[in-house]
Amino acid sequence: MAQNRSYELLYIVRPDLPKDALEEAITKFQREVNEGGGQVLKLDEWGLRTLAYEIKHLDKGYYVLMEFQGTPDQVRKLEERLKLDENILRYQIVRQQ
Image (cartoon, rainbow, N blue to C red; front, side):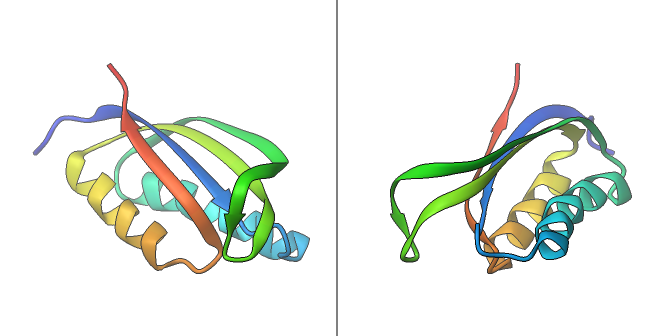
């Protein structure tokens, strides 16, 4: 079994979602990490911010930062889910030292 490593995930959620859909978009990835055997260390909602440039004809986005521990396989699965989710405008996962 691969060793858990620390990661940081920053993702931008569509700003035009209803409040319950926004909360589901945020907790969905938290559940994904926890159910896969990882652990969410910190979840920080930065809120609605203006984007540097338009993404999918939107000029604002809801930013979320999540620090978690997980395996490289778990990160690949999480990345696939982020790619396929239409409510996520952009994301970036970085391994922490």
